[in-house]
Length: 185
Image 1 (cartoon, rainbow, N blue to C red):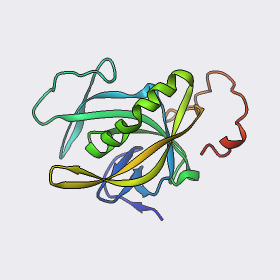
Image 2 (cartoon, rainbow, N blue to C red):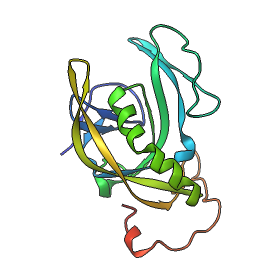
Image 3 (tube, rainbow, N blue to C red):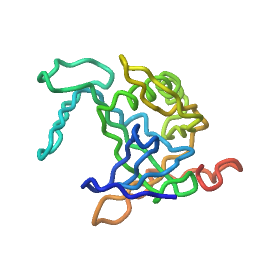
Image 4 (spheres, rainbow, N blue to C red):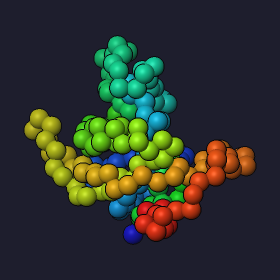
């Protein structure tokens, strides 16, 4: 069910268009859903080259444009996502989604207005995105596979754990999950 990728790195989340799967911590998986923290969004530019750490430059205000730092930089975004084993991930927990992948940007952009607007009425919650299907996106002569999302629901924000530390307590007690919140998603 899972295939481990050979690239280096720690905890991360990404869409792998060539494999037509998501990757969580170097493990390819068939996710059915994941949650996003709308308040964690960053937009800007990213530069990647072999043998050097990625260089990301973020706007002070998400969604605003900043000057392109160099010719080799591409548009990028960062978002904190929450994955669960129940939805097909190899682990349950928070992962960073930092990418300059066009298919990922376009897939997220297609649902972002609904997420952004919903966040206003769901303070302190995160949005569960359902992967409805995989679609073909055309970029010049290339066809790239990308996920198509729908906003499934809003859930209480799970606690975040810092490496080598005690779990961060939730800011305030929350009501018990509703009947449709069982197992998060």
